[in-house]
Length: 231
Length: 295
Image: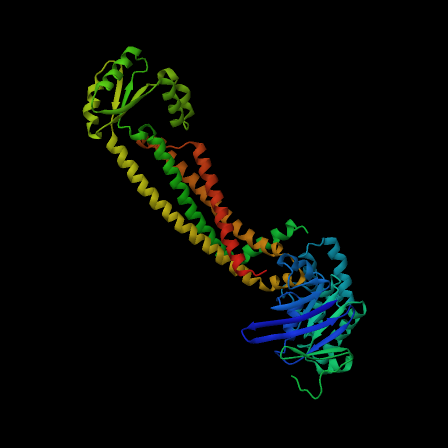
């Protein structure tokens, strides 16, 4: 589902974000990417979303090679990928319903399609009774669930999560993780970059650790790190 | 994937309303510059109509009586042939003169109807070796049988052509500068619009909206500003034109009546103004979208 092959990426001369990274993730896996700030987690996710191109190497996502993909194909590729972020990236002047509907609207889906899909998805994330609220009337956990609803509304093959619990208290973090697990059980591959030791340690999923742009560890059923302190 | 009309209209009008003050500035600048450009085009048309008989360096007009006989005409042309001061001349016969008359008076259908071809004077159009000989050569023909009138206001015509070309140059230069600034204003309006919608744009990219889907509302916003400005300018040009016509007919300023332009000319000018407005608006927003909307 995801294959990163000998990828290098640097933003400045002699300042590598990723050095010769290779990894492979199968369909339906749930993978944590851990590592300190600046270790290359975000760069990896940006490469998988084709927000960046690698300087060398290949990136395969959902059967497509991204390094050589022409720009006009990128939007169509992204429709198969869901993404959520630490800062939720919801539109503050749109209601919960409209935020989720926006993702369908801008790829040209019909009104009818939208009016059946969105309530279903809000039901799934447990926010159907709050569909007319604005994002800042919701808790952080609820906002992230709206973002998940938006990311998952096209039933993507892959869900990328960049520190989705970074702004949440433990209780809300767990509700979001529960949701991601359910999405993973539908066969969606989930790749989650995180700092959250507690979550990684208790979920016991595959863990890829990045350190200064290199893969330091790749463990099935791993933990966050050995005696490592993170913020 | 089709872009729904409803979405585009909603986005574009929403953007315009959010930046209404800036949009207004851009629209007004376009209006003023295009009104100037349009008025200057009409002036050019007017001058060319008023001076059409004098094209090709003609300095002396000898009008024959409409009913002059062919021997009378022949006598005049013989005399022109014999005069050493004459460089060249040509004879405008009655039917060609009538064609010209119809062109000149295209705006006055009543006058056109009341005049028939047989009432039109044919004329000799004379180019002299030395323009200063016009009065002396002209006076030779003044009293000749069959000659209706002799006309040699070369100096006035030249001065007029000269002055109008200067005026026109200034107006066009001013209009060009204003058009550039209008374009830059629109660019800035669109840049602000893009900036104020950056969250939406980011989400659109994230969920896979195509580049054109993101761009079109912004492009259209600039185009609408250009179009609205052009429409205001077009109205202003018509206003100026009718004011001029009113002054000419109401105060009987016959000198100016030669400058009246045909409705066809006005229409073409309006077309040009609207076209330019759309071009300027679209160019400004296209540049902003290219520069500031990384899709």
